[in-house]
Length: 196
Image (tube, rainbow, N blue to C red):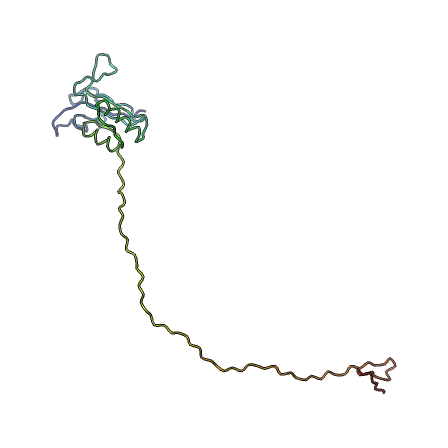
């Protein structure tokens, strides 16, 4: 189901709004579930375009010369709708409006929204809230400073120690003997015999 709202041209002094509406300069915007088609509040109401398809802009037409789809009937307000829900589509549509008045082009949605508001146009576009620009601040830093600290310096102190010295120890190797088969004599290493 399409989303739209009723609008009426309502040039009244401030503080004289129609009950159940929001007044924006010379435009009344219906906000209640009322039957606005019966000239609610004594003004002629027109349904705005489908807001599900793009941002809309409503302009007052005080001369009551805005053509309508109804033959022979004119209106005191007109509508524009963007082709998409993007900032660039919104700026493009606003530039179309300003170009008809011979005005310079807008470069940002905020410029376009400010101009629309100042000239009595209503829009459902909500300008993004600008993020604060971070400023460069000096961050204190720790600067190293030299502070002498007394310290213990190791000194070499010779300590006498006993170092083992190699001293050969004579060893006696027992003689080798061979026993003869008949067990009658032993043959010594030097070749002599011991006879039994």
